[in-house]
Image (cartoon, rainbow, N blue to C red; front, side, top):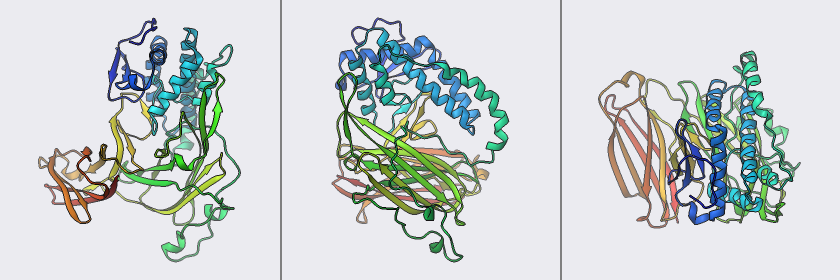
Length: 481
């Protein structure tokens, strides 16, 4: 345990499965720290991390977080419940920060610990009510540390019962609205007037004819800036049911293209801050807007990393079919923007046929603690798509779901899987195995890349149902540098 920790707290353990400190468990919780925490933090900083999690334990926040998870699940369609839970998350983190300061922690040391944890978990920090890098905005947390005296509101907790009382009343109306997954990252509203998607993109006057007329090539934004961003986008499709599909849209913007401004916190600590806005419009073949997303974003870091890509992900529910997707990213510090205008072909997953989700090539696939909420979450896993080349010392992680025919779910015959990696048409690696049949099978694999030379590779997964003879194939590409 780090020196200077005198609070009553559960057992403190190191774990390779977590990327930031957290209180784990309901009945006999323990404090988990990343196993490499000593490499990127000081003894004093680790002491503040432990005090923060001990404050969660003393307040019984793990029980409230569990209750919130149930409420979010039951009232997933209700924006008031989602908003209230988010406010409770924020106030809970601020209350524990205040307790750490009350115990004598130096604000500058504690602020440094908060930023180091956020930077260590960059690209999709796990978020839950008993997590050190929780959903509270970093700027609000850091600013609070240097107030005299610090003031933290806790009244948001009282809004949860009100939300629950209003939920059944409003449910009838909200059931008919397409529900979007909550934003995976906490964002600060800070927008600028440039680069707004024009109305002719939002609601084009469409003429009858071919799909090309309905979904034309990329259209320019108004007054395009001279120094545009070049965002990268990846869309993965997963089955919700026979009629609905989850589209996970991941957007990446390199640090090198964002404009960071150096700021000084109240304690004199220098930090870098960048921000802007993500806007997306998805329309169907009639030009009707199906979904519109407007999310501001903010990035805080201790140093700029030219090889790092800032990731944003949004999950939306769509029906199978063809759509048009227009994405706009604004950089509010540097007056830059970038757009992507593309078709979005959402596949169907019929219940009587073998099918698969998109093949996701990920930098991180790891289990999430029970009850936690996280960006890039699929089921009980954190799946963070890779938007950059892989280093030879890294591992390629793949994630895919396989959906067998409902009529053959009880068959004892296996589903055969084959993974093939090629380069320029030449086979590099082939692995065949048998999978135990289930109605939905989740496939995760970690593929070492140490023996691969730099270059572009193709990867293919093929599944054959021994009970029906059906075969489905998915393909992807990755780069080793």
